[in-house]
Image (tube, rainbow, N blue to C red; front, side, top):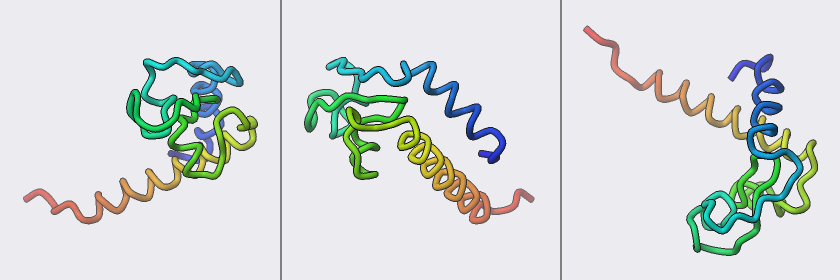
Length: 95
């Protein structure tokens, strides 16, 4: 993701996911620490950051600030971009 698009993407995700409101919907896999409904602990999600991702970054969703969430968002975006680039380099050139 281009650096210029990160903030716009983050803000759009925050609006879509409910922003600062802690979601504790038991039917949402993102609210469970195991990433699946009923697996792990029901911790909720906030700012579009799932329970499992928040835990990987050392946070509980209930304690996430907007700055924490943005830091996680950028970290994940950078890692995914690097993985995509790596996969593109390994892919054989079409003949």
